[in-house]
Length: 355
Image 1 (tube, rainbow, N blue to C red):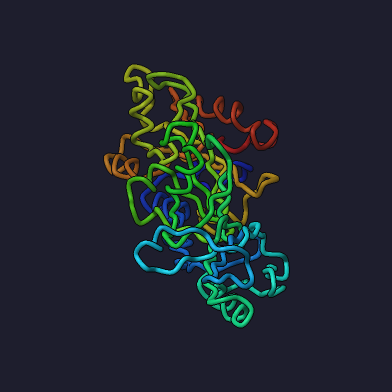
Image 2 (tube, one colour; image 1 turned 135 degrees about the horizontal axis):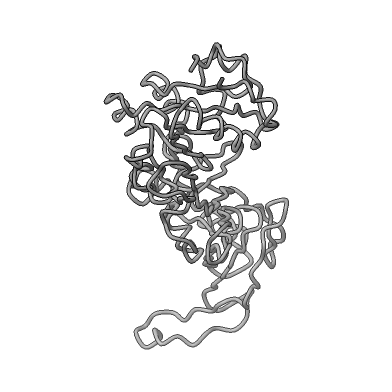
């Protein structure tokens, strides 16, 4: 069988050697959540547009501005009674970052701490109210939220606090994921960056449980990966595998290995629509691509070579791969190509691929 770079067919046949496997593995490595995004800055308690503020104003007696005094049990101890203001309805910070306070009017609050806002309100009431005391708190945090969607129990917005909510905190607030953990992939969108990682990897590695930032979007994706096993294997079936990935060696184990009485150990093939970036540049330059930019490739695995077993332990199986083992590599492989080539090109166009 000729070298892939010298073949005239439209589907390239590539011998799975250690250099080839290293190139594929390197090209498929993705930055982890910690590497791609990292922890968002710890958010201080500041007011933002859309936040709901609760303002309470207390005035020492005699209450000159906010009404009658409240009877206080501390009178028996000689402490002065205190008058509380009439309830001020909670207010949403408007688009200009302002709220309205009785006897003061509009006040800018965006980007300020509740304590700072309270000090300004008390200062501006000085001379109008008798020794005013002001408490301002954020009743509902709308300005700093994370959106959690996907295959979770309840898609929702999660408000961020000074605690510094992390990825697993947000998922727990949404009720957790609906599917088994090892079938789930987590995608986080932050600004113009998108990073993904299997949920099980996040649970195993605390570094991947990153601190979330305002406007992050967390998407829980159910991805039941699978490959197809055809030919002289222990079983012929579609085999599911976890989002954490599967190596060629593990895949062969799951399908019962090769049938000793039928299989040609030099005729194990993997059909894949491959990313051009992981292929030899010369091969990629001469190969036609599918509409989504992938290159149809058949990797041939020579299981008669002991070194291949080490390669198989690291070579990753991808979703929708087709594994095939032939009875006679120069005859049966043509049947295999005729079956799977329809996924990319017409059968006629690949007739000369493996002559």
